[in-house]
Structures are given as C-alpha cells and as structure tokens.
Image (cartoon, rainbow, N blue to C red; front, top):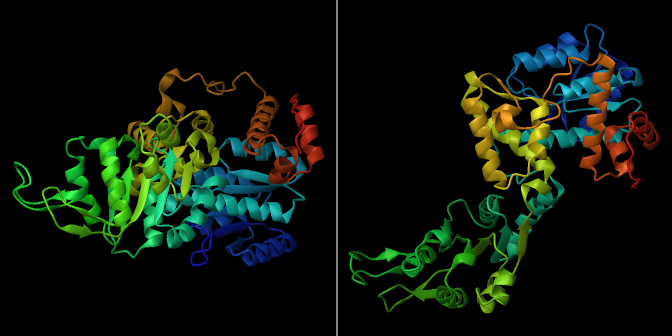
Length: 449
C-alpha cells in the first residue's frame, strides 16, 4: 500500500457518532484517502472481512453494539495480517487504549485531538504498514530515507556518476537499482559487479573483456562488464577493494568512455551511468595511499550515505513488516504475526548486518516458529534477557496497565528524541497532559522543546 495518487491508502473509519463520523470522513477524503465509513462494529467486521483490503483502521473504542478493542482482538485472531488500528479514545478509556497498543494496536489519539495530528498519524501508518504490498520501490519510512528516495529521480536525470557509502547490508545496491530505474528505460542493462569477489589476476579481463587467443583458455571473444553496461548503468560495488593498478586503468576508461579488450587493439566505446558503492572510508584510503585521488574525484560527483539500520528505528519496524508480509503471501496457510513485545526487542537490537541480517532473521523466525505468533524467542532464542518476558501474573490489572502506559510513553519520547512538544502532538494530547502523565508514572525527563 503506498500513498500514490493512483492507489490512495484505503482507510476503514469506525465511528457511530454522525457528526464526528461525517467530519472525519470528509477530512480524510479531502486529504486523499479512500475512506469507508462504518457506523457499528458489525458493519466494520463485515467490511474488514471482505475482499477490499484496508491500509489503516481508525476506530472509536466505544461502539453501539460492541467494544472497538474487542473487534480488534477478534480480527487479530482470525486475520493473518490485519491492518494497523489507530484508536480514538476519551480520557476515561486511555488505559484500555494503552492495553490495546500493548496487544498489537498501532497507536491511539485522545479526544479532543488535533485533526492535523490524526491525518499525519494515519498517513504515517499507511506508509509503515504499506511495506507489505510487495513493492520494492521504497527505501524506508524514516525521514532520511524518504529524502533520499525523493532526490533519486532528480539525480538520475542529471548525474552521470553516483557514489554510495554505508555499512555492509544497509541497502546500497537497492539504492543503485532505483537510481538506474529512474535514469533509464526498462530495457537498459543494469550490470552489478562486486570488485571484492574478483581475483586480482582476473579483474582486468572481467571488466574490459578479452579477445580470442588473448591467453590460454580464451577460446572466444568475451564482452566485459563495461561493455555489457553500454546504454545502462554499471554498479561497481566495494570499489574500495579494487587494486591500485586497476584503478588507473579504470580511470582512463571512465574519462575516455572507451577501452581496449585484453589482447585486443581496437577501441571499444561504451557509455553508461556509473554507480560506485563501498563500506569503507574512501577519503581515508586516499590519505593513506590505498586509493587513487584522481579516481576518487572522478567518482565522487554525487555522494549518498546510507545510515545504518540501528539509526533508523522506524525503518526496522517497516522492514520487519515488509519481510513478514512477503512470507505470509508466499505461505498463506502458515501466516505469521508479530508479538508487540517482540517488535520492541527487534527495534532495540543493533543489527550489525543491517537489512540483510534483519531479512534473514525474519525468514528464520517464520520458518522455525511453532505457531502463528512470533515471540522474542523465535528471533533471539531463550537467552535474551528481556524485562517484559515474564507474564505479569503477580500484578494487578491497574499495575499492568500503568506499566503498559509507561512503556508506551517512553517509546514515544524515544521516537521524537525526547522533545516534549513533538511527542505530545504525536500522541494527540497537550504538553501539560504529557508532563502530568510522566510525573504520575515517576518519570523524570530533561525538558526539550
């Protein structure tokens, strides 16, 4: 599910109050959402169980025929991949909303709420959970990745060369592929070369190709990677591993846009967009003499740095749902869903292997899980020391709900870097109310506007 004009996010609005419902229906439609308004729990259940898929559900907790929370819990038991629920709650039902979030609901806003905050939250949920639609055109939902995705079409129109840096597994090749798609037609070649995987003795013949008889075993002429990329895009992944002698030959080929095959004499022209990627610090390599300075300036025309996944918490959640959605679509009879506490544990883990490690973790958990619910043990085994792993059997309901609210407020503050005003706006409450809640729960936060 994406927020494009061709496929507007579908929203199921569950509100029995005619005035409130009509107002929210008009507002969400005006903001570009495709809205179905349900006035009762029964009507909503029929709509959600139908063939029409929804990206977000915006629901009141108190409905005329049933509790909105019970409707959500029933749907999570019967639907393998339910849409995210955003609850609208009055002050008297906040504890219920917090418990529902702990049970897997996406979020809640308290009445009266700022409509702009509501629209922003619905749009954010549509993007986050929309990862499950199988689209590969999105880099993530974090602000830094959205800015990167927005800049790619413009860069692709004008920049012939792009340098992408970032840790291994962060998604450098995927960014390069999107750059290629924006820059060329569907028929243009995309040639990806991992420079670290080619032996030093073979790298010249692999890049430039060779003529028949150029060396023992060369029984026919072979086109190299530079020639194969003509009219399209060449990705030189891990270019920092390229030998210095080869760097000099590559620089000349890039400058002249032509080269000679190994064992040949004829100049072979080739025009392509160049994307270079590396996890290493190229500037530091230049300073230490490990990388040619002239080649560095040739490839560092436009530089994109992909932050590690541990610095993009929203993207961790988004990718988990994306990979989980992919598994569920491929295995509908063994669909999995995520325990809310597991999601928090996944966001707390550093993911040194970044997206590559996260994908493998989700696939492994889905395959090894003994049931439909993916708990913490499915990802980390039984050795993970998780403070929430023990059920609150010794707590009263009030104590448990207070713990839920405390955890949720801490998570919200973390999402907004401790800024009280922004956190309060995202929660749909006033800044004063947020302070009072923190004081009541015994939380002391450094004031940040």
